[in-house]
Image (cartoon, rainbow, N blue to C red; front, side, top):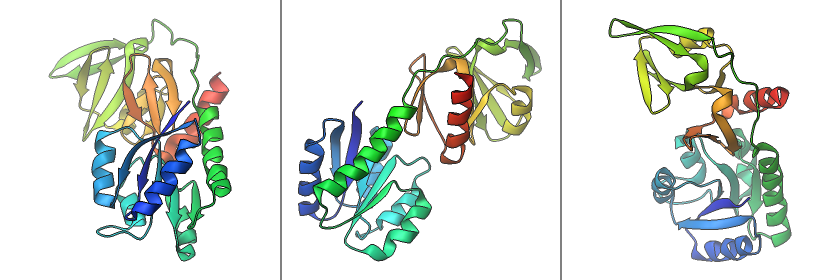
Length: 235
């Protein structure tokens, strides 16, 4: 397991220190360096990142203001010279808070906590197959479709509609996520916009869910604990 890391700081020296520390840990891979929050947000939209080292006091947006813009942030370790933000920072679910100058021992402790958590969560899940005769009936454009539950990979919210994803296509149905969830009680709510067939799941890495067909779905922070508990009980 190797976590892809991004350092975000407006001071070049801070990047140099973190890059050196990251290079000492074989389970970490530095994939980018950003010098302000706007640059980092653009980078995160285009690149998979599992851990960010984030400064607080930066131009344009502070680190905490940046976190407010992220729907499904990766693991976050704050790196700052200001201790007064510590309490507020934990409201954003950050993993740790490192005060500059950062000692390698303290850096390693913060990283190991995340690596241990990832080790428990990153696993292939084996679950019983849904009954082959179980199905739901849905209507699309006046046509009634019979869909076997075992064929459904996931359901995606789409306003007042849902997309029922089956293999390489989807069926658009005029139902809300709440409505369809009552019809699919065995499916997992992994995000406000996604229901997942457990049997389609391959592994979980951080806030990302990978399916057997290599598709990737977000795992919402508010759903994560319940999902992990459900999967643990199903194994």
